[in-house]
Amino acid sequence: MFGKYSLASIGLSVGSALTVMGFIAYGTDNPTLNLAGFFYGIPVLLGGLALKAAELKPTPYSQPTPPEIIELRQKQATDTLNQIRKDVTRYRYGQEAHLDESLKRLGLSPTDEERPDLMSIKESKIDDRYALVLEFDSPFISMDTWQSKQEKIEKFFGPNIRSQLTQGEENLIDLALISTQSEET
Image (cartoon, rainbow, N blue to C red):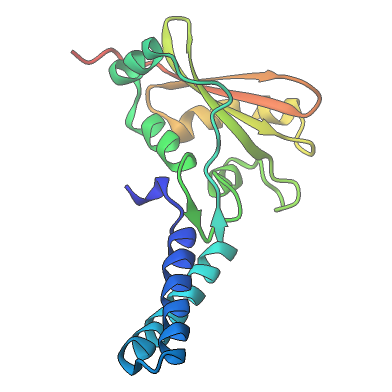
């Protein structure tokens, strides 16, 4: 629920308001509000600043998801596909990049500098199946390396998932995770 909202921005807003209230209360000789403003406002403000420094913004959709794809998602998407979609489209804290651990375990992130960056996602229909397409900027990991890891990708994100790799412009790699799960009725 909170993943759609930046806790850092909320902390900064509330902390700033309480701190300003504390300063105003100090100037107007109101000791109760002064103490509340300083003792709550400053720690909340500092907490908001700390969260802002560790904040990872949600991955945007590269195109809106049409209603028929949403319906297909509800029928065919695996728990893993839903979890990936939810995780990368919310605010995260204390992580360097979306899917950084997954890429590391797949052998697609030898170092932080060489790690592919998840630029956007989209939901689509491939061969009448629901697909979550992860769009990576991968300047240091070649398409051949991605293809050599395709079986490992399917096992890692599976069961009931097959993958399809396509190369777009220059360093762009699209990893489509396609559901092979039968439709639930």
